[in-house]
Length: 195
Image 1 (cartoon, helix red, strand yellow):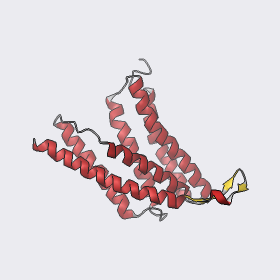
Image 2 (cartoon, rainbow, N blue to C red):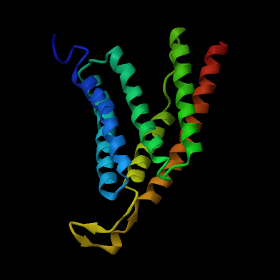
Image 3 (cartoon, rainbow, N blue to C red):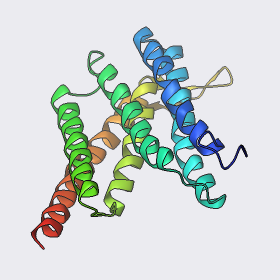
Image 4 (cartoon, rainbow, N blue to C red):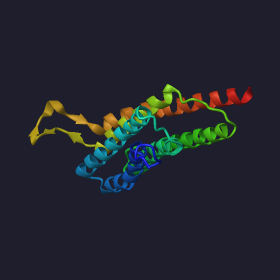
């Protein structure tokens, strides 16, 4: 079987790698230290890059598979939700907001399944794509969490950045876009079903 044309092609392997990174991310967050947070942000950033890369490769090589279509959004949701849930006990994100984000993802996934079973395709909006970008930027900031002054061992006051505040800022933008895109998807779903 040709490596690129089989089920286990490079895009699908990248997606599986994103899922495999989740336990590593969870363990790093559990340590709750500056260095563990930095490495958690590196792992999460690598996963975010593979999210873009696997889709780009699948389209370029024309090897979009049913497995890839299933795994790619699942991997995104799993790693984002794992990070957000692990950040709750550290006090970096409010539990109520994470609950609403999780509820939105479950509702939209359920509606997609219903639509798909009826042969209806409801295309993802740009809102959903922007939501994902803001979520990933927010999580990277929240994982880094601490103030950063140092650059190659030199303390540079003018580079001061409180990554928790950066992450929180993007988290609330992501939260608004998550709810907005969920409402948009619900409206599209009921509009299509009503026809």
